[in-house]
Length: 597
Image (cartoon, rainbow, N blue to C red):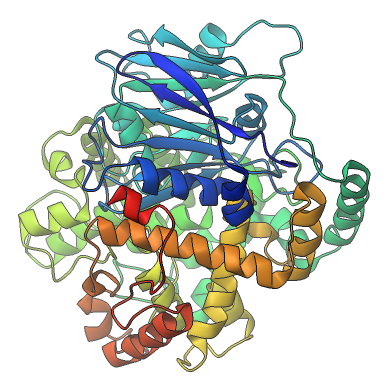
């Protein structure tokens, strides 16, 4: 089929063997690629009740049908598995340069099963997979691992393009439940613990390389479309704003809106936020825009600190979510310390959102006299020690490494802990942005802003932030369109450019399939139903689609709140509009669900 490689690679880490399999055309027609294909594979191949860190859990890498071609915003890959952090569906995405190397290997998905008995590295190419001893890499940080993997395991074959490596750090090796997978040093499939699953299979690094190319349905038309798309997109105010400050611009915006979570979810703003703002960061340090391949937005910040005790430190970042987690929740007032903690998490290979939330939970518990630890609000060094202990599973870090549900239960902090399905929310307070409360509650992977990015219409005034009527309808429209993004594996920040109408044009040019809005929405609904079926099979109940009681019980200092009744209203509306039962079950048959149960 046009736009697809038409095959997957299945790698058995236990036996160090592989097979190449075809995928029926009807699967691509029904679900496209990326998330659609990977969810179908998870549902049909993962046994029900699989241990997320067991050999039976599959780890799936996928590039989308737009990757490697002329389309903009598509240099991305996705990772799909069962999450060790939540016990439910896991999806995580990363950009940079490596995704095009992933795609050049020539597979729509790579399915890794089994587990090695010693550290292993893989080289994946159009002919299959090669296996390498990675014992000398075990224990190395993300940056060193990527350098070594590319030096040792890339193939010197004529016609092959630039290799790309995806790697884990010590946190992944030690099965920290929120460990990440990284590439290009600072690009990360950061959430849901996909790095721990890779670590459980004893796979330290995977190098992708090849010469495979997807064949679009209309090559000439796609090139013309991409040229016109870029010409118009570069003039977009949103594109210019991202290029100017990246996501750091959100610090001022969210504090002005009173929705910047601070002091572990007890405040909607903090007095020191100007110290953390994008404007000040760009003024005081060397910061330049940095882009993934095939991107004119350049939202990344290639930054070198010019002042403070970490002067000279260089990294791509920090993103808004890292600033909120450490600067807001942990009340760290110095941006250079936030950057240092960002770098530490990156080197060790763990998600900064969860790491910051867990540090702040400990700080709040200490302040309330419920934990006796030397960790106080604003103490960056204490955060650093805790992060290192988590990665090493040492002391209190061993408790936190298992995730917030385990830590809250172990320490009797369940009334304080903020999470949905075991995943901590990003930096958008649902007591102000009520649609984000619904988004957190319904997200398949736990509290997540990226499945809908619904903060955008609420902040922009497309719908009142404090309203609950019609929220579910608009949220589903956003969710469906972004589900199609994930089947194509497109960057979220192109959401204002790839409207439904633009997706119709682009998908048809690449695949030749019926890409009318009704057809795309049917595919999005089918993928949502499959994902929901996976979670239901793994034990999801209506109680998992809820916010923590503390967010209903405690209003923000300005009095704004989200009541349980308000969330229940939106949730019931969401289920109804999705065509699900009152307890959130798809009514019709879900392909693959019966075979997998």
